Amino acid sequence: MTQDELKQATARAAIDYISPRLEADSIVGVGTGSTANFFIDYLAEVKGQFDGTVASSEASAERLKAHGIPVYELNSVDGIQFYVDGADETNPALELIKGGGAALTREKIVAACAEEFICIADDSKWVDTLGSFPLPVEVIPMARSLVARELVKLGGDPVYRQGVITDNGNAILDVYNLKIERPTALEDAINNITGVVTNGIFAKRPADVLLLGTSTGVKTIT
Ligand code: 5RP
Image (cartoon, rainbow, N blue to C red; front, side):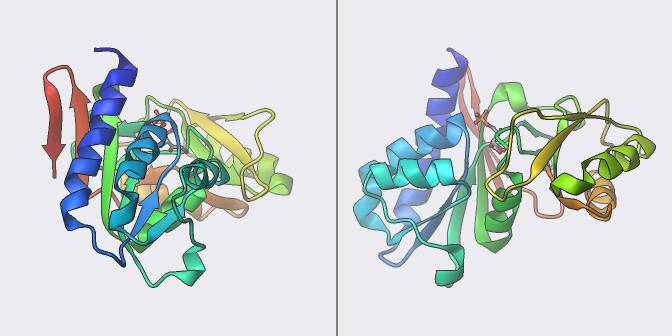
């Protein structure tokens, strides 16, 4: 199977997972990226079964609206039943690296609101130890050099993601060469650097369920 076919299979599995549990007033949080895009396309098939969505990016909001799926502001909903999103890496504890699509801050906010966070990923994302994928860090633009120097002190090699401005108007530093043995501690340490908006380690709020697309089928890992 191609990587896209694996992504499609895991996105389809997410629909199969949530659709029996959806109710007329359910709100679904929707992530960002190519796997999330497949999920959005399949979600359109069941759009009569729930109230609407909260999107983690402008791009996902546009795709949802194009399918006629209602998109709400997070501040106008009482809660989110499911959050479905991809990842750049996942370890066996379902701690993630996210933010390859620069949407990490809104993704982390929506995940924090969700009763259940379902990660959908192909098996190229499965790792024992996080950190092979460069860790995205969203920073306030004027603090970019300050934050970069602090990230070097933590053992990383930050690289400015040229030409990318997040939906929040900020910059992204991608941090190479981090071997993330203690994800929660590093998530806290980086978030404590002045000028950091958030970083792409999702360990304090990991996924609850991973639907991992493999050549022998989609595995459900909790
Ligand atoms: C966007 C993300 C994505 O979930 C992550 O980059 C995975 O993307 P894809 O499904 O295209 O592989 O965190 O900020």
